[in-house]
Image (cartoon, rainbow, N blue to C red; front, side):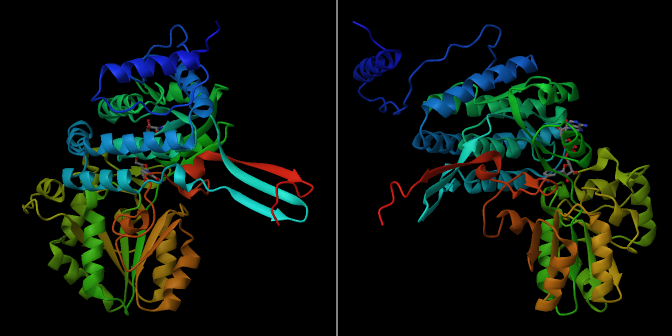
Length: 484
Ligand code: NAD
């Protein structure tokens, strides 16, 4: 009697569930074949020594994932990822602070939870159908295949969780090249998620990475025909390198989000929300408020409101001391951040120039002209420059210049609808927030889904599973299958 591998698997499942009456019923995975790992491809729950092995394992997993698992299986496995990640939020948040030395534990917990709860799964992959005289057209979201995903040091495991949910929901598998400064916590996260995936009935190696991430590995993946898409989250140097790779790319690059506060604004609200957003995780987020342009009379009161929230107001001499400490001249950008101070607590940065403030003081504020280094540089520190603009028009001009054409994120505090619209049109950012902290634009205290990969340069915007899929069309002509 001939017996297929699918039938063997079903029999084994039946026997095992009979042996353990308390065990949950096995997941209804539809397989037609059990893939065997190729020689030399064995990793440690997704972590490989060699990049070619990581790609090969993810490639085999993708064939299995796309061919033998249904949408309901993807949904179940995404839920398993969410459950697993939720139970490790505190641990990963603590480990990130230890390994990268940046940011605030409590804010990392909030970022993780937003990512876990608000990254859409396969349910967002809606089929589009057009039924007409000439027949029935269907357009569906199909996988690319294996994706190389480059992740930043500023949201290391948050980006792994977010990209993993989005990418595998679309039927893809992923080879991560994580930031070397966060490689340990990323490996732990990836292995833990892979274990949860396998326990929920999914294949091994849906997510892979190399133990030692390197630029050379990125180049190798760009040249490997098994990698169908490169998705990079990080600075513009990395995004520009990806764009030159010749592969299909999704690039999520730097921001330097400006805020305009005009004379019609609720200044108490502006002070409260700007303090909250600019100090969140010590300002290492690409979408966090980096500089403020306050129009005319709004300037003085806004600074007072920021102080009322707990901000320390720097004198001009202290501001210049901080420029020397925290920034360095950069031949390309004009100024760049001294990495030693990126993501540090305001109290620690201020202590270095002899100012003692309690740790509850989350932000330092300085009053500067529009071309000041703290305005120009994407410094990612809880130091917020506030510029007094003579008019709304001047504020818009200064904000557009400070954003450097990144078209990433901007916000406005105003009750003037015309101002809101004019700034939106001029700044052209992917995220545009009115009267709240910019993090509301990724669903943290706002509506809409969350992402840690905001793809401005390549246009996918607030990415989700759809962003990592190919559109495929099926056309059934001659009116077939229509019911009217
Ligand atoms: P980074 O550019 O130093 O590193 C990001 C990743 O790219 C890392 O994995 C790094 O190893 C890799 N990398 C760097 N140069 C590369 C190159 N030439 N080729 C291939 N890979 C390269 O950035 P970071 O310090 O980790 O993160 C902060 C930066 O990322 C900020 O500029 C921030 O605005 C941006 N960011 C953007 C988003 C977004 O969604 N748009 C999200 C988070 C961070």
